[in-house]
Image (cartoon, one colour):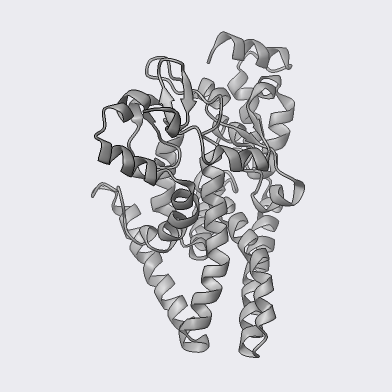
Length: 343
């Protein structure tokens, strides 16, 4: 942590150990966490029942519920995410049970995703730890690395960063296909590999039963209309939380976790209804400062510490703009730049 960050935390009334001051917000509240799980999953399952029941009677208007179900899918993913950090419940078995339950609704294998996500939390915006496939939306290359590419590689790289591909085409491929395999996973990650295939087996049985009852056409339409917008929104959230104007990257030994909180994470300030559906994950800097803070205490922690007031704030409109810029890290200017400003 820089001295400036430590001084600002102390000025905000924190103890002489500022990290511990932030971590005081990590305690979960069992009743509140349980209500989040029951209400979110209950509403999502209820939405699916209403949609399918309507379609069985020929009421295509029931598909109007799918945007609400998509929002609930995002919220379910946030609960799974909190479980992966052990922040939703005090007992690890409870977090793992709920996380695996959520994974059947988000199509995201819990143990596999949790392991990769913890690697992300240990080294985001660190120039020395780039290149993991699971970090493709928060990773970058430098201007000099890009300039050393052949023309065809430059073309392919530019194409791979086009928002039409990254934000709108890749998310369904990731959630429907990529998460069905243990990608970028060493063989000694036995539990994580097993978790992928057990998740696939349960999904196969569950969706197989749905297809038998409803028919492949209805199941495909409903699944796509719910999961697709949820996947696009989730990927967009992750992208703009780590790639934005003013973000900083550093090499070891200059890189440290708390400075990366202040300069490597955005505060995506969303309207109230979007905050609820996204579980306040937009308060991303606080989440990285102490991943054990449950979603419902992130904003309070932000408001309590003056050091967080200088973190980059984005609106949802800013986030749309940021999704198509700030792709390369310019080591000379120490800034992210647009692909098309570099030859």
